Length: 368
Ligand SMILES: O=c1ccn([C@@H]2O[C@H](COP(=O)(O)OP(=O)(O)O[C@H]3OC[C@@H](O)[C@H](O)[C@H]3O)[C@@H](O)[C@H]2O)c(=O)[nH]1
Image (cartoon, rainbow, N blue to C red; front, top):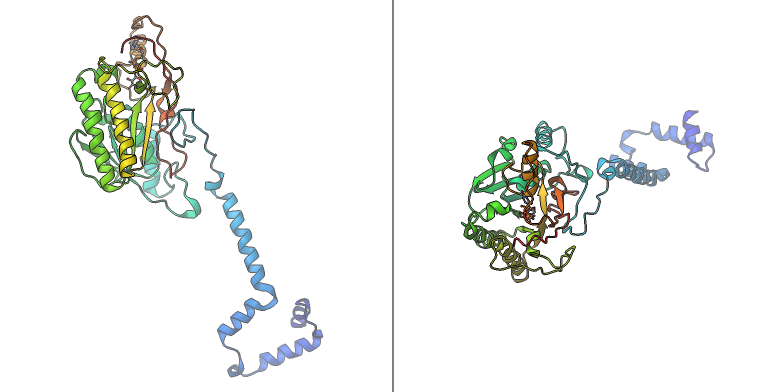
């Protein structure tokens, strides 16, 4: 009786009883007369629109998976400030070495994918080999945190002139982290996919300390790293500076503004050095089809800045802590746009690995 009901619901025209009889007869046939298993399977799949139901089921499952997967629910990235050269995203200001360590530990235990890594459909993204020159410095070390947290393999190249090992010490033991004491003024050969070129003293106090060395770092050092990028086919990012605008006549400065720079002033070693570095970067892009980025960084502050950095924020903080009066240079009418370091190094997507530029910079201090 059960067989006849099944046959009937299936929509066959045959009478239920007749269907039952036929099925029973078929079941009583000797084994040798049965169709082969593959033919039977095919008939089973094709019969009663099972194939169509299976396909519809798969489609529904796929849609649900895509809608409910963590990758799809990730907060969409926000756009950066006007001066941004790269895609930026949502990274908390509280991101610190501790957070990087946590992400690393999770990775080691295999419980979580790399923080910030968007891993679609369970496939692991390709690990990028990245070199960060100046990676032990104030900005560089924050960038290294983010690259490692994202799952990249990072080589820091630093001569420790202003950089400090303590800034990246929390990555010791991470198999994805490597540190090389090296001055970019000398060539170096590394097999990498991306180069972040940050190496250069950035505080006026430091870059004026040895001006010839400063311009050599900017010109020869950048030339060496561009040569490496060309040789290994790596993407190259130059961290430039708001100082390429010199003592600007336009406020705020748009990226197309060419600046007002003194070529023989005390800041020229840095200003002109970075301008030449930008020129070299664009000439390698045009002449050697190198993929490049240039980020003009404005006055940045935050954790790991040296107390004796010499820049205005650290000076004022140090003086305030010592309960000393704050020293304002010049006539005090100069203006700057400041940015917190975690607003500088942002990622929203594993395919973007760039520093973004925020903030604006103007000066009327006449110190150039
Ligand atoms: O104690 C201080 C220090 C600095 N200042 C003044 O504050 C202003 C900011 O000076 P900073 O030393 O912080 O540095 P600057 O803004 O001139 O350059 C800085 O920011 C832009 C980056 O690209 C540069 O690499 C970085 O050096 C200057 O006008 C300076 O004269 C003070 O009034 N008192």
